[in-house]
Length: 603
Image 1 (cartoon, rainbow, N blue to C red):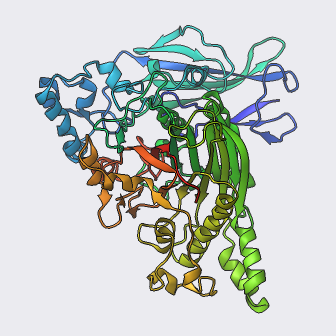
Image 2: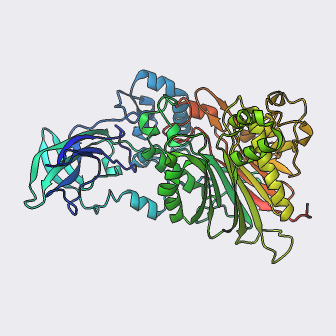
């Protein structure tokens, strides 16, 4: 007979908006074990599984820590109470929690003292203000298609919660009848119970004892701090959003570049400081989607996106928001794991703003094979390939604008744009490989530029800090022959250094902060730049490393930067030790730039 052997949840802590899918291990009548569902429509030997979810509401109110929402509060800040700060912000789980958070917590007191707190609605604060639309704020609300789907709770329709039983000061409300359940705001602070029973298909009676499991208390999804767009075009204003949430400047377009941290790398061993529930993919995927959709970018370049997550989640979800998708998975000559979890680069673009003209795929493994065949002696070929073959790729998309570039030089001319999206090799000891990969990509882009007079963007995670040889090649068009990175060249592929050049007039978008005069937010952003390189102080922040690895480069003869997404402050991230955190779901930060095409003469 069909029987349930084990039930458990992948994450102990349920979060609002993040689907819960229990692991259910069954023994079939033939004694084989399975985790496949057995619905009423396809019973096995006259038996099927029935699921129910309950919300357990206790008569006793429980306060939750404002910093660690999975912990019960043990103390309350009386200063918050006196200042009439939303009560949810006043709770802490321990004296250490309160003292560690004081630097950030005191800001609440300062704001309350200087002005009436505009966020006086306690419930709004507790559940997260995802639909903030203040001037310059990025609107991070999901569109109805996404938000309503997230509350469907499996295949079962939503229905009013019914009181099923009371026991010992607790009331159990039935909230779902499918295997999966997505907690709602009504569940915050309450324990959920999942019940799985075997049912006789003929009598509809339960057979044997049911299996059930209790969750921890449901917590609200942390609300990322809205990031503003800062104008760098000389206009003294903060970038604002139109009624659709997009930048309301005629003839401009926005580009986002973001390494979202592949799930296979998001482990507690690497990121022990991040709560396990905040590292879980069901949580991270929804938080990342909410963030990406909220930026309303016209073009989105993502790195480290697993092929299964692209196909099953990001492509269909972003399709609902009007994006067409292109994808290039890393090659798998080195990687030996599950082919579906290999990551790659994905480029999305708004169908109402751009159309797809052409796609180029760059496989550095193929370039390595060609290089070794051409210049490496046969006796050293295996050694050379072992060093050069690292599975990295680049995805190049040629798009045509469906809107008129302001200042387009020839009316009626096709307005094309070339967008390169790449993820360069991570290993710091392979400085020659990094530089060779970047040089290979740039040579490919030069060929495209020679065949079509076209503005270019080069986005991605280059795993190279400002001042490194790859960064110098991108930003300066050449590498100093005395650059220390060139000392590492066991294969002789970087000699002579004079060949390490390109003719594309590339400039880093974020260096625009350093070139601008006075403006709202510009001084603050300049303090977040390295004055020696004019690049951000960091785009990647973990406990062990902080620095800039990600860039958006553009051809300065054809494009100009109008505004940039503000950079984050290290102190604000260190309250959670580092990235990823409950607030930000990658160990990188997103970069976004607004561009305008400018009239020019042909290169």
